[in-house]
Each structure stands twice: as structure tokens, then as C-alpha cells.
Amino acid sequence: MINNLRFELSFKNICQLENKLNFCKVNEINDINIPCKGLIKKEFFNSTIDYISKNYKNFNVTYHYSLYHQYSRNIENSYKDFLDFTKNSYSNRNYEILLVSGSHKKKYFDTINVLDRLKEEKNLRVKFGIAYNPYLKKYYKIISERQRYENKISSGMINSIWLQFGTDIKVLQNEVNYLKRTEQNDRLNLFGSLLIPSKQFLARFKFRPWKGVYIAERYLHSLDEFYCFTRDLVHFYRSNNITPIIETDFTSSEKLNFVYSFFGN
Image (cartoon, rainbow, N blue to C red; front, side, top):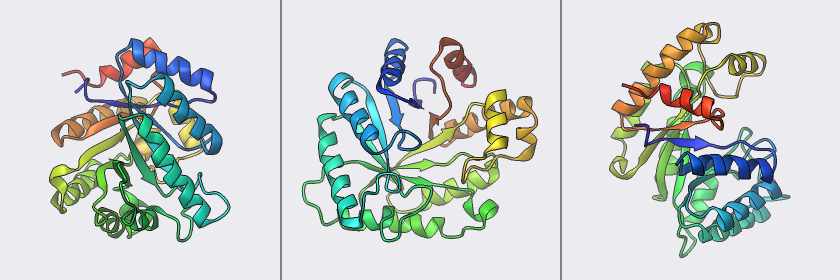
């Protein structure tokens, strides 16, 4: 499984991005994700893609595209920007777009709206992924996730499903079973978020929890228990043919070796 991982890069500028890409290259990490959040949005997001396409064409890249963060002035202008983005990204043949509505959905401009419009586009040579949060119904009392998923998948344009992180494997198993029962499941790739715990991560999460990310209290107060859960989650991903995506920093030899330690036999 260690050869079947994806890694998300976080960076503040192109120089930092270059250093992290070179680290990936040296350590034979080819499958990377570029988020669209925080500082990585608007022109910086676009320049990041241009930089990778021109200088690191051998990477297999998934670009996250947040319709919230990339929104510009109005719906029509924002949609045109998104179409331009998909066309400009053709220069890197090894890429996919994870299309997300964002932390605050724009009215009439979320993933479902955009997929509906994309069905009318001709010669659109793009692979799209969508996000799925298994924990919304039980822990956040939001009951619309399955219906939204079915609306997205009905577009016929979806190549992959990306599962949000959480620490309730029973809930996760139930939702994965549901996803595997849906139409077209034989051709959809499944990816699962993996947060590698550390004292620093726990302190930051307790101070400012990530929206939609459920972590049980016992893991927030015991690093050893969080380590045990992480190994259980890795086993679950392996058993269900789900590719893990590492969303915490890994760009030092010590951190990377620690990540890999969760994937031993």
C-alpha cells in the first residue's frame, strides 16, 4: 500500500512549492494533490498550476478547485474562469480536478450547478472527482449528503470520490457500502483522507477545529489512541480498496518515515 498513496502539498509561495516538489521527486512521490484554500486561491492558485505544468510534468496531479474561493464577481464570470481553467490544464496530461463547492456554498454556483452546465460543453477532456463527507448526517445533522452525491453522479462525468476524514469507522463503513452499491461504482476510484496525528496537530485542531471534520474527544486527548485509530483506518482503506491521501505535512525525512510507519504489516 505504501506505493499507493497520494500526498497533499501546502505552501505559501512558489519557492516553498518548488522545495516540496523536489522533495517529492527525490523520494519518488509522484501522486500529489494541490489544494485550493487558505493562501492557495485566485491568481496564486492559477500561477501554481502554470508552474507545475511547465516544470514538473511527470507528476500525477489532482487539482482541487473550490468554487467558493475561485468565485469572481458573478456566476457567469466565475463559470467562464472555471472553463478556462479546465482548458489551460490540458498542458499537463496527468491530472484530475477535484471539484468542491467550498466551505460556504455559493447560491446557484456549487458543484451540482456547475456539473449540470458542464454536460452541455463539447470536447471537455477532463476527469472530475467529487467530495463526500460520511459524517454529516450523524454528527452535524445535515441529511442532504447522499442526495447531493446522487445528483453529482448522475452527471456521468465523475471519475472519483474523495472521502472526508473522521474517526468513526462504523459510520464510514456504512457510507462506503452505500457508495459501492450505487450505479457506476465499478469505474469510480475511491480516495480517503488521512491525517497523521502529532502533538502540534492536536493542539491546533482543539483550538480551531476544521469544518466538517469529526474527531472523537478521546483521540484529541490521547496521542497514543489516535495512533491506534490511524492504523485501524489504514487497514480499513486497504480492505476497501481506498487510496489514502496524506493531508498533513510530510516534507522531511523524519516526517515521511513516520507516515510510512503506519503502513507496515
